[in-house]
Image (cartoon, rainbow, N blue to C red; front, side, top):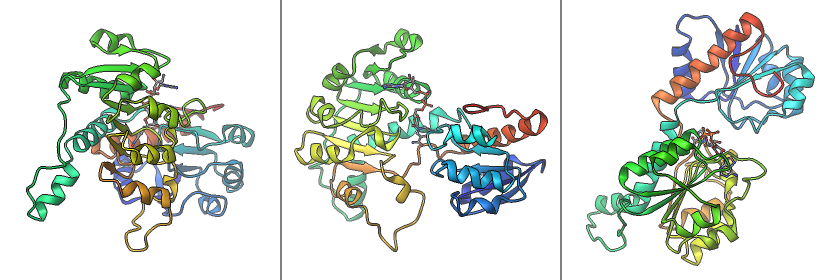
Length: 331
Ligand code: NAI
């Protein structure tokens, strides 16, 4: 099958080419973002492969269908950027990668937590300048501390297990508690209780209408003074402006983000020479107790291999009987 891969980043080309080792599929790599204007570039391909921030609205999907596309392969787990009703109306089949490596994201959340708590980002810069003073670098033991996990699915569950191994007391909030985690020592509590009791809060729930701005001004005020907040889920799960308020009044002890509400205009690109216009993001960068990475939680060899292999397996299954392995919505 011919597949046009939109928004190809260097690692996509490498991992997709490797997964296509038997040359079953003809892969056409484009750097263009998938939108109504670029969709006709897919002409000649039965499928397109879309990135997590390609807006797959009705207009883009109609343009793809007009170009002869029948299958939309999402190289992501999330599908909140796809108009599934429009896809169904247009007869387009949508497939996704429901799971790649939950360890990749959970371990990145732990890396952010350790770096933020022990001020590794500040220590690294100081030592390079020959400044070996310790003031301002004080952290706390995770052993014996209370860590709150919001969302204990695949990633949150992994994160909770790692923190249990550190000797932390792990609290969790999830509408669907995991009995195995409970047996391991995780205690499920209401969100308000989790926020009030935790030294660290880590977010691992999906972005849904119910979780949009779950961590807002009121939630931040409920948190323990000096607590750390880690978000590797989706940017809009927290209200960024409220975060800035909490940092300014010094009630939040530290903040680590791998995702940001307006990340589509920033992340995955090198803007170092031209700069950027986002004043809210720029304000976040001024706080010494804020650590941000640009959506790299998934970025491990194992996760990229799984994403490429599952995406091409979806294409192969569709070629065989019209049904991908992991259909989304009405497919
Ligand atoms: P999952 O579907 O296995 O788990 C999500 C959990 O959140 C479920 O247990 C669900 O019951 C729970 N949940 C739903 N609504 C909730 C609410 N209102 N409050 C608390 N919990 C709620 O998903 P998985 O694979 O663990 O991924 C979690 C999130 O991580 C994804 O939705 C995505 O936003 C994010 N993610 C981030 C990546 C990164 O590179 N930073 C990469 C992959 C995923």
